[in-house]
Structures are given as C-alpha cells and as structure tokens.
Length: 423
Image (cartoon, rainbow, N blue to C red; front, side, top):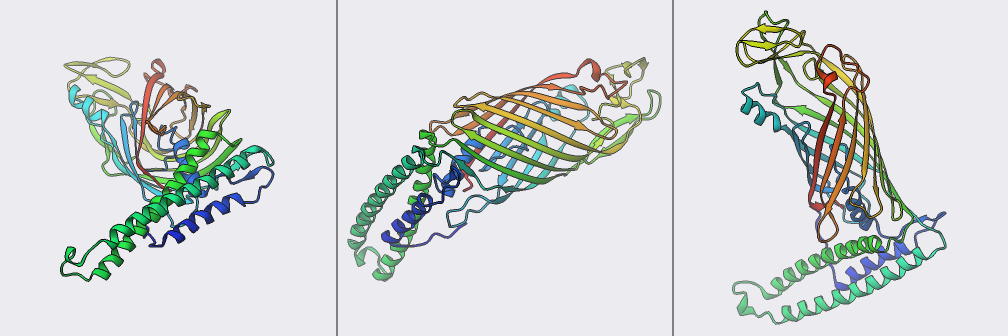
C-alpha cells in the first residue's frame, strides 16, 4: 500500500496544478497528445476495456474479477496485485493470480451417477501495458475545451480544499487538554493534522483524476484513443483428471490420469472512438496437455444396465460408464484470433473468434458471440454477458466419433469486475 504524504493545503493544490500544467503544456505532435492526466486515463480505460470481459484472455483493470463459462462449466476468480505508484503515471505492468474450477461437471456427474471430471487449478499471469495514445485535431476545439474545463476543475477543487482545511483547523484549535487526558495536546494536534492532510491529499487527487475521466466520457472530446497489452501466463492443475478406459468392450477397465497444464500468451490491440465505438483485436497462443478423451477420439460406453453402446455395436457389459479405445496424453499447440466490436454508446456488440489446434488434435473451432454489458448507476460496466454459438471441428478432423453429428452448441460467458480500479 502506498504511503500518503502529509502536506499543507498549498502543497496539495500546487501538486494538482502541476499535474494539470503537465497536461496543458504537453507537446501536440500531429494531433496526438494529452487531454487528461495519466491516472485519469487509467480510470477512463478501465471502464472502456471492462465493457468486454468474456474470458481469461480479456483485460480487467479492477482488483478482482470473476469469469464464468457455462459451455465448459468453468469458473475462475482472479485478483490483480498491482500497487499504484505515488505519481501521475499510467499502469505499466501487473500480475494477476486466480483459481479455476470445474463446477458444472461435479453437479451433473453426481445427478447422473457418472465419474467426476475434476478440474481445479491456479493461474498466474504477467501483463505488460502499452502507453495509451490520444488523437485529436491539432488545432481544433477539443484541446481548448478540455484545457478550460480542467482549469475550472482545479480552481473548484482548490476552493474546496481550503474550505475543508479551514473547518478542520477551527475544530482542531477548539480541542482542549482535558479532552485528551494523559496525552500531550501539542503532539495530539500534530498527529491529527498529519493524518488529516494525508487523507485530504489522497481524496482530492482521486477526485481530480475521476473528474477528468468523467469529463472525457461526457464530452467525447477526442477522435481516437488506442492502447495495447501483452499477457504471459500458466495454468497449474492441483488435482488430475481421471478417466476410466478400456481398449475394447471386453477388456479390463483401467484408470488413466491427466494433468492439463497450460502455457499461454496473448496480445491485444484496443481502439476507442466516440463515433465508431470500441474494437478489441486479440492474437493468442497456447500449449496444453491434452488427452484422447477430451479430444474426442474415444467412444463413450454408456451403460445403465446389462447393455450399452460402444459407438458401433450393442454390447452386453455391466462395468460402469467408461471410454473405449486407446488412451494417451499429448501436447496440443493452439493459435487463436478474436475480434470484438461494440458500437458507439451501445451495450450490445459482436464477437468472432477462431482457433486452430495442431498435433493429434487438429480441430478448427470458432465462436460467434453477442457481448452484452450492463452498467451501474454511474455508467460503469458491472456485468458482462456473451451469448455464444460454438462451431466445433469445422475442418472435420475427428474421425470415428459421435462429434460429426453434434458439432454446434450454445454457450454463455459471464464476466464480473468488482472492487476498486488499479490506477
């Protein structure tokens, strides 16, 4: 936690004026410059970027957030460890750690008396942020209007600071020795004054940053804001997946294990325009420990009594539900791309994602999604939904399975950012 500086009202006001002067006097290079301070831009971008939060590849600049994927039955809870610096700077990098667990399978398996597909693990990822860039007409009105509005903002804040400090000093001067028995009155006042001005500085700096962000949102005085970020992470399973497999319907059933370790990297480009809306373009790569069961290369033997199906023949067995075929674990590399577009002030957008797998599992999969963002009374994104159409194995790479007859599914993801913004 950053220690707050105890200062006088003059020092607090001078610090706010210095931040404002930096923005006002920032060199304008071909219509690219600063309209709000760096920390104000952190707040602005956190709300714009959090308007799309569908999966682990997506960025949240909130301290905590939850992702739920109904199609996979997964829920992940994440915490951002970023600690703000005590200066006006953009967020440069941070580490996010989280837990991922399969919740849907445990319920359905218990209800249907099937084997559990337990998945529980932890993720840790490092994200590097690019420097935000703001574009506007070099000699247009946007810059002039923002400079004037910020100057008025600074003067209003300065008056509020002086008034609040004056009221505090009056109350402090009225403090009597008998009200603090056993303590040195001078020392008590010194400590109270130090705490008050430290809190005063923190409160009004935050107000200044938040008001700048709100000003930019409400006025739309910019042509384009861009940013980018790169994330590198790992998923570490805590417990193995367990599968009951036999080579054929008449051989012994064996238990097999898989630890679905993942290494992943992603890079996202972000564009925000008050006229066109928001664009997210993401490229991702992943390598994970896959297996014959989850890649769809084994038959499923559904046995409820004396007879069952191995995918081709009716068999007379009674050894419990299992998979039929040759089990193996293997590494699957994956490359994916995703484009998300949310028009203007709309709360509904469109998403398209495509991924290609290599190795024994070669499936080409895609997702067509409709992201929907719900905002709170302050206009800040509160919950993100994405209704999805899942298109699996579009290249018909999986043979001799039931998948070709059931390659389209419906999915839903939910993203919930909460707690404070990391700025």
